[in-house]
Amino acid sequence: MSNVLDGIGASEGIGAGRVHILNWGVPEVPHRSIDPDEVEGEEAHLREVFEWAKGKLLDLEDSTEERLGVVEARIFEPQLLMLEDEELIEGAARYIRDNRLSAARALDWRLLELQAKWSRTAHPMVLDRLNDLQDLQVRLLYQLLGLPDPTDVSSLGENVIVVTRNLTPSLTVQFDPESVLGIAADHGTRTAHWVMLARSLGIPTVCGMGVVSEQAQAGQEAIVDGRIGRVILDPEDHDRTLFRARESQILAWEDEIETIAELESITADDQPIALRANLDLPGEAERARIHGAQGIGLFRTEFLVVGRNQMPGEEDQYLAYRSVVEAFPKQVVTVRTFDLGGDKFPMFLHMPAEDNPFLGWRAIRVCLDEPELFRTQLRAILRASAYGDIRIMVPLVNDVEEIRQVRELVHEEEARLQKEGIPYNTGYKLGILVETPAATLEAVELAQHCDFFSIGTNDLTQYTLAVDRTSARLAKLFNPFHPAVIQQLSSVSRVAKSAGIEVSVCGEMAANPLGAFLLLGLDITTLSVAWPSLPEVKKMVRCFRMEDARRAAKAAIAAPTSREVVECLVDGIGGSVDLTAFSGRWHLPTLD
Image (cartoon, one colour):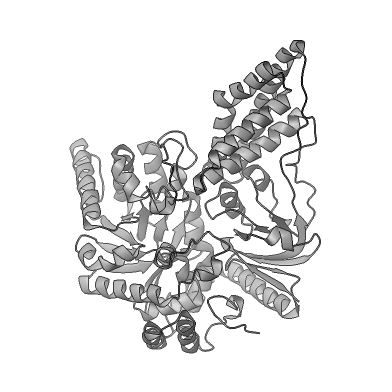
């Protein structure tokens, strides 16, 4: 019997192969005392290994830049900074001098101290730093002990699904997408450094699974669907049939990308639908264009700051924004201002210790408290607006006063650009990402100060249901079709229509058939999805009828439970779109 496990879909695509259990970890370091005349040699050995590790990482950084790009290569900056941290090196050296410990044992003690200090919080950014620290720990200790490098993954074999508790950037970047057909991990989030590299490599990935490494066995057949966040161990015949159908469909879409991209984005009854792309990195803009994106509905900008030890300059930001705008010169490009905090925090900001970081100092709160950081970004966006239709989208706005303050800052930066004679587009638009119940309840007032709304359904669901969307244990409770969520979607859509401003959705809900069908029924006709999903979403949209969608949405809004919401949508879709890939999700019945 097949074992179906759900997690976080972190990298699009689908792959099948044999499980390779990747067990890597910190070696057992024996306790060894040294004689006084060995102290100088051990300390020198420690510093030599740090220099060796720095060289290895610089080589990895160079190869990553050549293979994937400059932005992806920056992922190694936090580890390089750690290798230059005198507190780490000198702390280990003191243990050698004062406690007469071997270099390996001294470093092991010092690293355990840092881990204990950082582990006192569950903050995702700190967990990412711990992941980087562990990556270094393995590399340094194995070298100090004279053991073979466990990060060498050259012998994984062909057609494998890597199953592991967690990964590191230096492991992931070595994977060959021709051999590693999928990754399934107990830990990790969509913004983890190693996950970002897996996405850049195009390897289907599901993370945050909790127990997959315990349930999988080496050599076992497995299917990884990074699109919907599902892993199937020991798939049965109907699972294989579904996989082959999905794989054939995806391959057909890839072969027909140009043809699909040129198709009109309209429903079966001729309602135009704007399909835009979500971007994590500037380099994805061209691929999004090829896949048929009608502009960019969400350009995440955190890549400019996360993992860096200094504030990004205006010119770097301007060039990044301009490159995306130039890829879509006659279409909308929506730039989200820094959504820092939660699981994304740069090293140059002093992060407060918070029990609930997703409810803490983040997004617009950080930006308004750090005007130098925010003004630089706003100025760079305004400069890039000279090359196209750029929009500024502010995340986590709950209060009218917040958007007023942002508009005032933008006006001040406009005045500075005018004074300096620097061109920009005076027709830019400023809007917000609606992602909390507070924003939906305040939507009427907020609409008076915004040029557009974009709804972030991921966070809106999380905050409405009080469910951590990164928790594997709570995954079944994270349901975007909960009546409380869809009633807020309906309300925001009506408010935007009444105010005469555009409303779009840029969350994952827009990329699945039930969600897209519901949104169209709520008269939300601008959808923004991950760029690899664009061909599939366009094919879906072209099968839907607005009349059916509106009728189903009306019934769904009146439904008292999420199960009944889904039933209304399934009935409305009928046989127009195949829903079998989503069997078992959101109370969707198992379909064969």
